[in-house]
Structures are given as structure tokens and as C-alpha cells.
Length: 567
Image 1 (cartoon, rainbow, N blue to C red):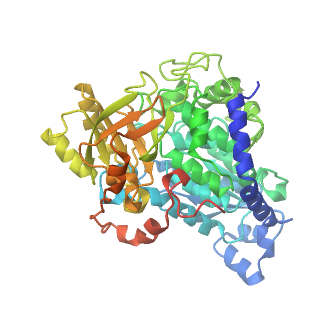
Image 2 (cartoon, rainbow, N blue to C red):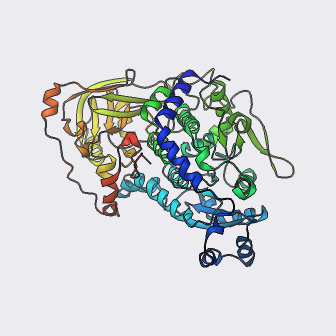
Image 3 (cartoon, one colour):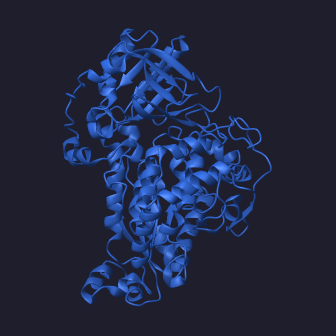
């Protein structure tokens, strides 16, 4: 199939603007490659420490050159809904050993449960946890012992953080190992897992195979075997720094747009790209959204969850349809081999011997209320819009069907905390047409917490017939789209952005058709206003320890990362 000209043009401009930074990155990771196992460069006393905790067989293997050493890095804790990760390190140790390698548990990373901290002070640490996870992953891999890595993680901050950390060791092959959806718990979009598969960091078809099934167990075994095959000592040629290139990043964006995924990935994909020396920008999302069709209707746009998506055809059907539409790059490197169509358009199943076998995807969706073909999409365009205007730039996600209110013009009602919004919603003070402005929620103010507690009440206002929208410098990743929500507004209020000058009653227009976010008052009057100042300090629940993050973090449109984007 021919790649869509817009996809070709967007990819080319990303390549052009990334020439210098990508070259620096590739030079660095290729300089880190060695002819043999990395541990052979260690002095004897250092290596002795590296093998001291292993079995006698492991110690013997690691003192030689024939056996690759695989790092296992896990995000397991008892608060996350991924119990399989508790036992996987031991299983993977045995699988890698049977494949002729040695697996060492290199470290755990501190994953935050967004469901537990939602609406609580700890939510201010959610976004920053991504960069802490990246640093923790880097610490785990920094021992200079390893020839490859297995990453055990799930979650919209967890997986990007682990990948960012692993990209600092871009010369290593890395396989991300999902746990799959569980039998219970709240519905999830699984955007983090979907993006990893489309970007070639998962084995094909593995993202949404349910937990505690024979096929899921077989995939875990296959991941352990595959990472050994990809190591330098075995002649592998697919390090993570080569897999995550400009085409892979564009594929990730397209998958996000086609599935109505969490808007937080407009931050995370930018940060992942930057970690690989790639300059991805919101304009790229906007241009791709104009040509990528919306093919899935899953939570939060509908009642279906990742399990229903998988049953309807899942990633194999989605990837095949997007390739047929010309909006994915086929010519990419993946952990399964070269070529997206060759490896990722097949459905996995177990044969009689319990081995994974892939068969071609079906010709149609198993449930067109959840997943559709590119010739009969939920919408001809993607789920995201980038809004621009005198207030700055923001992201808005449109629902898969109906597309909601595309234009809202109403007086502003300004709040400095989501708690104050909830008070007015309960007392009826917001029973009116309004653009609800929630400021001082950006990364420099309070770490950009999720504002998901606002969604149900605001939806109720819309159902009553009021014209309602939200404008915020915070996050609302899973907003279902009944009410237009402009998130990640930058510059944020904490750096005296225009958001800090909005007053109650100012007329604001949010126009998703034109991609505009306007304040309809005299520009001189608006500019001459003194900016509001945040008065609520980020103290308690450990937030005071993250003052250095709030001081260093970059703007939302550059990934809201503390690492910068010019590496």
C-alpha cells in the first residue's frame, strides 16, 4: 500500500528537524555497543559483585562470554491491578536460562496507582512519576552487566517512563512485557500497551491477551526467549534505539488518534521521542489527526474495554486497517523482525502442543460497535485537535461518535482548584452556560494532576442543556468528550501565561472545527491585567520533595519532562 502523503510529509519534517539530535543520540548508543557481553569490560572485583547473588550455575555462565545477561525491571506493587508481575521475574529467570542466558532482577520502579490517588494530594506526583521511573530504570540498567532487558510495566506513566529510561541504553535490545487485562477492575483504554505494540516493542498480538490464560503464559515465555535471540552475543540487530525511530513514533501517534486514546500520551510520546533524539511536536499530531480515521470506540468513549477491543479483532485488525489506509509505516524495525505488516497483522493462538502460532487476521471486525474497518470508520479523522489562540495552545479530544459540541462560546468561570469547582457544582452555582477555567494545574504549579473527578458532574450540566466546556493547564486524560475539554494549555498559569489573566465573565470561545481557543475581549485590556498568583503550596504527601521537579519541568507541548528535549 502507498503511504498517505500527509503521513509522508509529517514524517519527513520530523526527520529534518531531528537530524542533529538524532545523530547525537545514535552516535552515543552505537559507541556503547561492544563486541562481546558488556560485563567482560568490568574489572574482576566488579564482576564478582555482579554475580555474587546468583546460583553457582549463573556465576559460572556470567564469568564466560557465551551466555547473554538479561535485566528484568519491574513496576510491580500491590496497589496496581497487575498481579501477574509479582511472579514473572522468577518465571522469566527460568525461561532465559532454558534459552541459554541468565536473567537478573535488576531493579523495581516506583509505580503510582492513579486510581488510588485520584482527587488526592498524591495525584500531583503522577506525571512526575514518569520521569522518576525513567531514572529508576536507568539506575537498574547502569550496572554495565546486561546484554538485553525485559520491562514489566503497565500504566500511562509507567510504560513511557520505563521506555524513556531504557532508551538511555539504546544499544540494548528491550522487550516490553504486558500482563494483559485482568478479570475485574475498572475499564481501561490500555493506550500504553497499544502504543508499545504498534511501535514494535511488544511481541505481536500480546497487548490485550487476558491475564491467567494459557496464551498469556505462552507470550511471557516467548518474550523471554525473544530477548535472548536479540542480544549481541546471539547476533541480534534490533536494539531499542533503532526500533524507536521517526517512523515508529509516527506510528504511535497514528494509533493513539485511531483509538481515542488518553490525551496524556500527547505528553508521553513527545517525551519518548525526545529520549531517542527525535523532535516530535503537537503540530504533527494535528496534521496526522486530519487523515487518520477513528476505528475504535472503547473506554472512555464507550462502554467497551480493552478486552472487548481484543475480542473484536484487536491490534492485528487495527494495524492491518491502518496500513491499508496508508497511515502507518510498514518499513520499520520491531522486536519480532522487520516489517509491521509481516509480523503484526496476525492473530495469535495456541496449537495442540501449547506453542504460539499466528494466523492471518479476519476480513472484518468481530464487533462493529467497538472496532471498525478503515472503509467504515466511526469518523474519517482522528480523535485529537490542537487548539491555538491568544490563550496559548491546548489539546482537545473528540468522542468517537457524535463529536459532541464542536463550538462553545460562554462566559468564563475561573477556579484555582478542582475542589472549588466541585463545590459550585454541588450548590448549583454552575447551573449555567460556562467555560470552566481550572488553572494552576500545570506541571510547574502542581505537577499536572489528573482532574478526572470533574467529569461526571460536568457531563450532567451538558445533559441539562447547558453549553459547557473546560479549559485547563492540567490533565484530564480520560474525559469522554461529552463536554469539550481543552487540556495541557501552555503557557501555564504558573509562568504567568495568559490563563493567569482570565477573569470571571470573560467571553471565551472554544472552536474544535477551526482549531481555535479565543478570549473575546480587548487585547490591550487583557494584556494589562496583573496575573493571578497561586497561593496553595504543594506540601504534604511527599509533594515538597518534588520542588526541584516543578522548577525544572518543561512545558506541556515539549513533553512536560524534567530531562529537556535537546539531548
